[in-house]
Length: 188
Image (tube, rainbow, N blue to C red; front, side, top):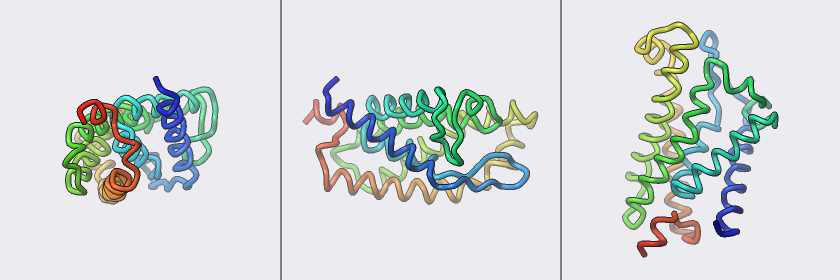
């Protein structure tokens, strides 16, 4: 792995930590915070690609696991990985991987619409696909009840985050093409 790749991985793990500086907004009765960090996997996977994006998220999660208070609200440590909302955290690394993989496939024809669709699929679909079953198991709710009664309230905000991420991904592609995903560089 090149030094540049290591720098990007660390830099984007730091970006994920910086997104945690925004205080979480708790919805009464749900116990799941609305955070800016859920936009992180969209940005990280979309800009770095699958491999570097996934490694960046793993680095971030490892730092949280060893106790660094990098999650929104200053949380960190192993306890962050066992709460009712922890499934969403597990979904971050997978989301960055999937988003990066898909962005790499459309890099040469990437536009806002494609970036938005991929951000929605990975940043909402994948994260909810991991987080909702976890929340359902931890809260004792059924899957449908966990989604319709609890998670559906988060979708409008997550769509806004996907739009912001898509705009940034496309802008970075145009302004700083040196951060091209790995597969695109090998094809070009």
